[in-house]
Length: 230
Length: 230
DNA sequence: CTTTAATTCTGATCTACCTCAACAAAAAAG
DNA sequence: CTTTTTTGTTGAGGTAGATCAGAATTAAAG
Image (cartoon, rainbow over all chains, first blue to last red; front, side, top):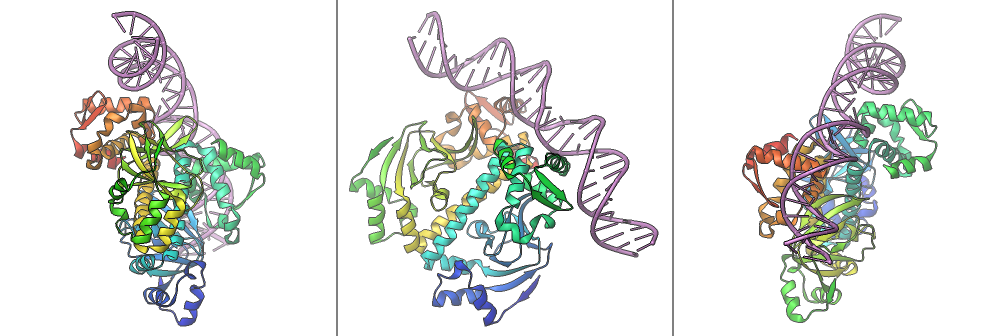
């Protein structure tokens, strides 16, 4: 984890992100003062479940995996891509992160003090509104995860995961090559062995194609049907 | 569902709630204009999963159960008590509720248009801040639910539920008498039969006492241990 | 290039928990 | 009070999916 107090040029570049465009004058100063650029190598933790959270991370470049830990078992919640925040949900409530995040690729982030975000929220309703929209999105996702765990069995869960990981938004990152079978099974909440067996079965039925780590969806409608039926 | 356009006296009373105290002058007018009091009988739906959401409900009196539906299976997420909102997470994102809520007791609510909340958020950072804190709380709860479903098996899950339902905050509502065995099992995400067997086993070990619908916790430390171990 | 370690794959068991079926008790309806 | 319906209770059997164990492949290290 390399910390760089960056120059004005870099700063202008960062602030280009849509979510900071509604800030004005002294509000920008506030962010400028409190923020720091931090670079994470592939495999490094951006946040660790249970540690003290005094800042939010804003992803500038790279892909990050968000997951829950319990002993040696993980549950992968989502991928985080440039333009998204890490740690939003913990910063205004609990003082500790309730999940871990790991860089799947080398990742450039901007670290913003909790107190700065707090002040911006109070002063700039437009910014608060944008933040709340993000909270709602994440809530929706969490409800989705609960639904998957609660109502679906492994076929449906894995199908759901394959559809998620093959979304257009992740295409530029070639995510399948960044994930091994264990990672995929942790998204579905099933064992690695089951994942392997199911993937092979899907390949046999010409629904997906497996070459090395890469997985291509050959028959999306059927996969969606499997995901729906559970 | 009885709708009452209430008088000024009632209004003053409602606005006493902590979350509206930071509002001033015309902001209060905004709430006053957009809001309506709605009374729900025990057993009635406050929100129905999948229906169009154009408003938020603020619970004034009564207890409400929030749950996910899928076919004939339910998963109970939490109880909502006076001073809390129903529908926050859906209103700024999706236009439909992603969960259902049912009144466990006769329940008095205040219905506030989504647009009014939106405007308040933009104009009053203090209000937005309060709202965000609620989002964070709910996120924490959702992470907790995922953890329960993912990492714990039925003993731990049921113990967790008993500890939750026996919290001091719910004591005034005598919630156990409002819930049947099916409701409890839906909180734990296990079958009714398993719930009954486990409850009986806990009673035999003098960890809880069952009389009729009421459940009293006799040995909280052991129950917490069971909940921890999973 | 060789050795070691990690990941992928496959089949054989094992188990937590659900489902089913049948009955008891309580509540609601007549 | 009697009948019907709902809720609670118990045990037997079935099953989805985990765990285990071992082989095959790939990647990393020496």
